[in-house]
Image (cartoon, rainbow, N blue to C red; front, side, top):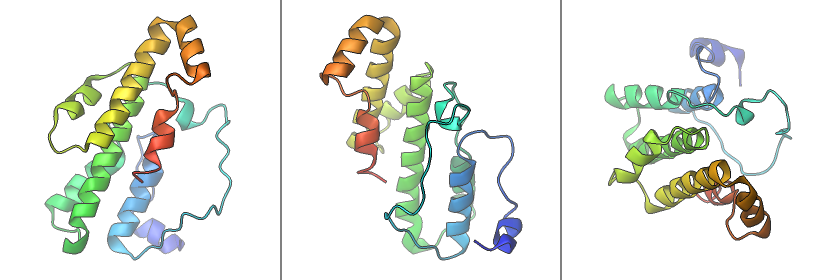
Length: 165
């Protein structure tokens, strides 16, 4: 990506420790054509001790949700992309709720479960995250058994979410 585009869009939003990269790519995609490939082109080390993926604390929201709602309100999303963009925002909202449920804050997850505009598949992933967190937190010895034996897939979200990206 040329530096001028990064500068033009104001760089990464500050004040967020989670999701600022997705927000930046979302803002780029709304203004410039981008290409997507599922081919692995980089190695991402997920075992970094201080990585954002390992922070287990609730987040206020995802920066792309704010950006996305604003550009929709201002009519800056091309009409042929509106439905896909709205669906992607729901996916991001679901990921935020899942993260918060794993951190012990389940209110967003419960509110999304009650909404009629959320796909059943997203709701299943949220229920899985809520249940696995409850089991791990309240029954640690039992959770070791059921997750190890495969009775309950601890990483069900990671396996399933690839289908919805």
